[in-house]
Length: 173
Image 1 (spheres, helix red, strand yellow):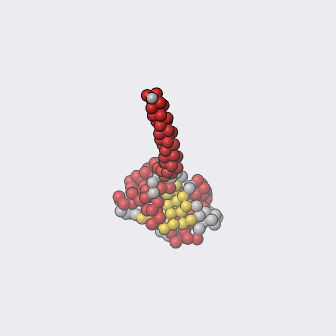
Image 2 (cartoon, rainbow, N blue to C red; image 1 turned 135 degrees about the vertical axis):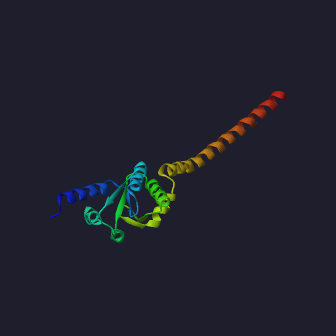
Image 3 (tube, helix red, strand yellow; image 1 turned 90 degrees about the horizontal axis):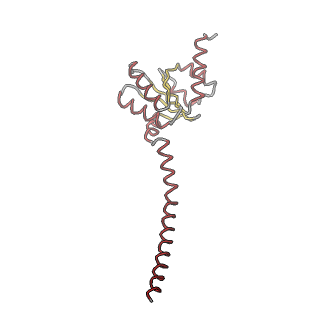
C-alpha cells in the first residue's frame, strides 16, 4: 500500500504532465541549491517549471502512457522542466544555463508523445521565439500584397501623369 505522501506526489506529477505542452528531462547532479533556484527562476520567466521527480513516481503518474523511447532517460537523478509557454524560450534558457554552469546535462525532450534526444533541445533553443516567428510569417505574407499595391499605384500614377500631359498639350495648342 503506497503512502499518502507518495500518492500526493504522483497526483502532483500527473497535474504537471496534464498542464505541460512539453518536458525537458535533465540530470541535476552537481548543481548547488542556489544554482537550481536560479534555474527555476529563469525557467519560470520563460513559461516553464523545474521540478525534481523520482523516476518511479514519474512512471506511475504517466498511467502507462509513457513512450517506450523515454525509458532509457529515466535513470539516475532527474529534474523535469514542464513547459507551459513557448518551448523554444524554455529550451534557450536551459541551454544557456547549462553552458554557463557546465555542471549538468539535458537527457531528453518530450513534445506530445514524441521523445527527442538532448541534441534536439539545442536545436529548439536556436529557433526564434513564437512571437518572432509569427511576425516573420506575417511579414512574408504581407510583402507580396505591399508590392502589388505599390505597383498598382505607380501604374495609376503614370496614367494620371500621361493624361495631365495630354491635357496640358491641348491647352497650349
